[in-house]
Image (tube, rainbow, N blue to C red; front, side, top):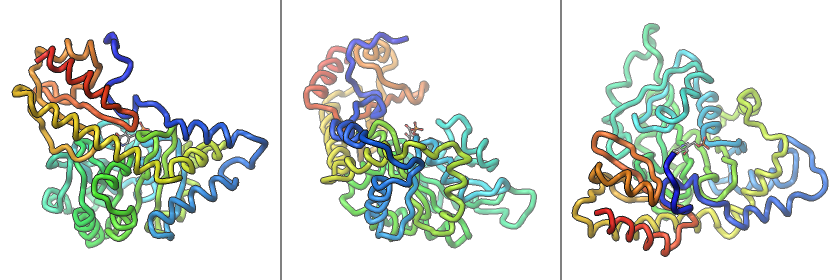
Amino acid sequence: MVYLKHQRGFASDNNATVHPRVLEAIELVNRGHAVGYGDDPWTTEATGTISSLFGGEAEVFFVFTGTGANVISLAAALRPWESVLCAETAHIHKDECGAPERFTGSKVIPLPHRDGKLTPSLIGKELTGFGFEHHAQPKVISVSQTTERGTVYTSDELASLAELAHAHGMYLHVDGARLANAVAALQVTPEEMFTRAGVDILTFGGTKNGLMFGEAIVVLNKELARNMKYIRKQGMQLASKMRYIAAQFLAYLEDDLWLRNASHANAMAKELAQGIASFENIHLLHPVESNAIFARIDPGRIQELQREYFFHVFDEDLPAVRWMTSWDTTPEDLAGFLTALRKSF
Ligand SMILES: Cc1ncc(COP(=O)(O)O)c(C=O)c1O
C-alpha cells in the first residue's frame, strides 16, 4: 500500500469530493416520505430535464454505477449470440471484470484504436460474418466519450460511426461516464453531439463530475427502451430510494453545474499539460482534450513520485502514467504537483 502523503492528487476524478450543492440537495430531499422506485416528483423532474437536453424525446433511467449503466444499456441492445465491438482501451473490455459478458452472454470484441478512438476504417474488417451461424453477430459499436485516453469524438465522428452501425443493422452505444467533459470541451449541446449524430443509447455520467453516485441511461432509440425497466430491475440497478439519485441530478443540472464542473476540470488539465510541457523528459502520449493526461516518464522516478502523489501506471512497458484533474482541482493543487515533478525530474 502506497503511503498517501497528499490527500489530494491526480490519480482519478473518482477520488474527488462530492460537490456541496449535491450534498445539500440530498439533505433537502431528506424530508418526509416519498414513493420508492422512481414514482416521486424529483425523479420525474430530473429525467424530464435530462430528456430535454437531448431534444425532448429521450427516455431516461437512473442507475447506481457507470458499469451498471453500460451493462444495462448493452443488455437492452444485445442477444447472447451477438457481439459488441469496442476499442481495446474500453472500460467495458478492460475494467468491468467481464460484467458485460456475464450479464448479456455476448462477446465483447476489442479493436485497435487511435488515441482511444475508433474510426469506421478500424472497425470495418470486423463487420463480417453477418448471417453466418458460426460467427457471433456484430450488433453494437460501443465508444466512450470522453475516451479512456482523454480524447474526444467530434459530433461528426460520432455521426459517421452511427451511420456505419445503422448501415449494418447495428446500434451505436456511448459510454458517457465523462460525457460532460466532452460537451464542455467541444461546446456543443448534448442534442447536437448525440441525438442528431444518431447515437442509440448512452450514459449521462454524474459520479466522475461531482455526484456522490448515480448515472443516467439515456435511450434515444425507442426500440431499446421497450424492456429497459425489466432489464434494470433484473440487473439490480433499480434504486428503491430513487429520490436521492434524482435530487443529486437536479442539483447537477441546475445552473449548468454539470458543465461548469467539467469545464473547470478540463481547464485544469490544460494548465497542467502546459506546466508539464517544460519538462524535457516527460512526453505526452495523447492530445489533452478533456481532464486526463497520459505521459511517458522515466520508470525510475515513478515510485518516488507516487509516494508524494499517488497515480496509476497504465502501461508498465512504456511506462505510461495517467494524471487526471477533477471538478475540485485547484491552482494550488497544480502548483504543488508541478513542484513535486520538479523535485523528481
Ligand atoms: C470510461 C468509464 N466508463 C465507465 C466507468 C464505470 O464507472 P463505475 O466505476 O461507476 O462503475 C468508468 C469508471 O471509472 C469509466 O472510466
